[in-house]
Length: 410
Image (cartoon, rainbow, N blue to C red):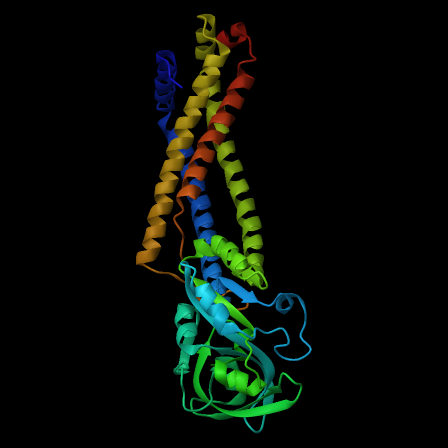
């Protein structure tokens, strides 16, 4: 597509027209810039939140979760009824995939934990300590003591901080775990508290118990594991890796982290509605401001428009000229707003701002705004297009006036 010299003439004509009333043009550009910056900052905050929640969910369960089909669909009558019996062989198969970083077995169990005077419900997880705690990274905070280690000389556990307070337990405290075994019998095991941690979710910290795989299997009297958490090199590898591993293990079910990330999906749906409505309102304001500026400009230049039409200028050419004016106003505002949003996002990485704890959590988090190229380009283009359309719409309504009335306008 080529631009003719006539089109370039109208573009230059439109550019100079935007400079005729610089105060009005400056106000219009400023409002468009603030609207653009608001959309980009809100969208960047939402993207940052999505990324953080996705990372937290994936590090909790694994990017992929491998288990028996019934494990995901049917309640168990006894612990590990639908567990995996040949976990080591399946681990070796999965580790052959180049995208896989870790394959971590887990044993899920429920029961009671007691300090001798008080008993409360626990949600315990048997894990491979060395790898499990390394992949959790910043999403698990050690409050007291230390994390579990492989090949410990005695049965040890790590407690959620709220559960530790409830049991008045500290590092080195002796507690008792009680649960039903895989054959339905009641079993108990004395353990020592190795450390106290926090996930940042109070409801989880009230019940959370970590122990090593061997201790959990000993308590349940089994050699099975509940599932295998597959941790990949990158989040982007989840979809292709899921397909490859599912083909590698036809008798197993391979779920992605998203299937179990209920909190992530709820927050994303909520934020999409909130920021979608915000973007619509801001876009409407920008369109209204640009349209108002163009309406004022057209009214002031009614006689000029009449003169141009009397000299043979087509209405379409004038409409195009006014749409170019809208393009310059909207484009300048969008670019200025994008620059402002970019500066603020970068400043937040240098001077972090701590946000208060969100509902359902006990710890705050740093305010981060993601810089997404697609979001920036889409927003800038949207602002320019809306400004051009609103200008063209106002100009088209004005062109209905006759040439004689336009020349007689005062």
